[in-house]
Image (tube, rainbow, N blue to C red; front, side):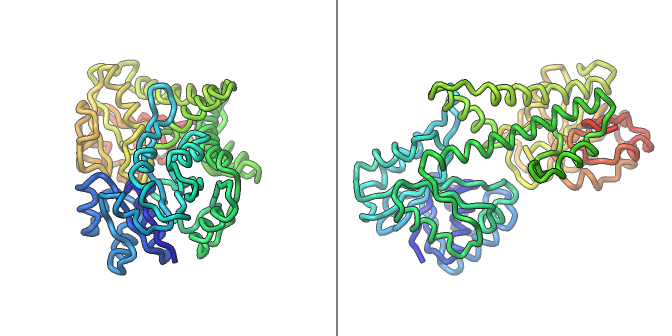
Length: 426
């Protein structure tokens, strides 16, 4: 088993740390956030991720996982350094790798000869070489190992991945990284570093394109009288396409898709290629936000100003507490700009620190819907599908609902007396 340092204790870093410890490696996870590290040492996982608290607790109890705030000290004697750091989008669309290079500056002098720096951060193509140069050493190796973890399903995605991508110019270093995953049954794809870095951007960009396509297709279905469920059933049955990511919604968001799309457009432009296809996908996503607002306005007879609207779901997807680049927050912003008053309920949002102050948060669905003129389902939480909508309709000023996730039975909602709209269903 290997000694591993994981730098960064966010979604990727913490999942990587816990899962590598679960596989039997000796793992140290470091992060500059002292409060977060203090919580983790006590077994308190500060993010909502299924199965992660249990893995962390077990790894701590077996002493396979330790937490620290000092990367330089933790790097002493380690074989592998996994970089799981934020690479936020800069104003020009490029990914900012400042945090990555800062860590390299901290640890490069103390790493033993032959150590391997494994980059899991999403970085511009060519960063592998930049990291190698930043070490100022020729006895260290740098390997690209992009992550493909879905928030809410990250532990399962790590331990049962579709593939493991390893990008290295040194065959031995690539094989050593592959050995870390030896107990995982998944194909290993060995490529050069630039290809590995591109695979990450290409994956997220293609998935975002697929979501925007089905959202646009839902609009076409409404226009021509087709049913999006029937269309996607036929479309997704084609093995070349598959049914995944063919569910219409309020738009794509989250911590990855928006910045990765913009970054790939910028990477292409810097290399001399105008990626107009991706620009169109980004534009289509903006249109989808506005489309949800238009549906709300239509159910309110053309007037949003002075109306009270309940938002059901604020996170960018179900089974997470992540609000970063959430479509729900963007729709909320556009509604408030039109003069609407907003209430909201989300089962994982317990703090209002990241929620726009214009939104009044509630602790139950019923509280959120009390005396509102309209409700909008923006996140696909199962409890919205199983709610007693007959009872909920009685607390609203009028039973009006935009189902931006197609969670509910359309005919049943009409029977309950709702003015109801969804995406592409007839």
